[in-house]
Length: 214
Image (cartoon, rainbow, N blue to C red):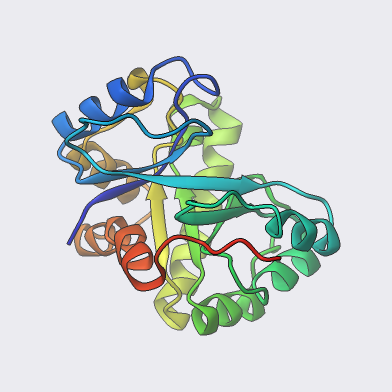
């Protein structure tokens, strides 16, 4: 199984170049990273980079319009979570791979109905570890509680999970071992972490690059 960090933000969104972040990820025992990166991927990098696009819109209509403009060569499309109705709506759309930002969405905005839609359509729910590392106590605790709730729901409904560092520099990246320890804070078992780290690679192998909708 390929261990993939489901979201990193290289320069210019972050402070470190894509090449440097991929080199760091390799040192941290990852096999690939999903990079939110607009430029052509540099050549001669040993660690694979999947190109990710994040869609952050306020309405389903705006999401659909944005999906029509996804650049050719995109590997994974990620949607920023919002309220209950929005999450249920986007989880019913085609061409979406990951729902992220659950820790920022309102309480109970991802429920059993959303979980069943995610399971049926093979859409992963991302657990972004950056708030656990960088938020103040209140924000950190909210993220831990939300992830614990998502995990309990996932164990019943079996939708896919991904894990991301959300790193914007090499200082924000964490090793596979550190990520396993961080996930244990909200009750995730080592085997569950291993399965979640493999999901992005499995998605990309199954679907190939995203086709731009005309």
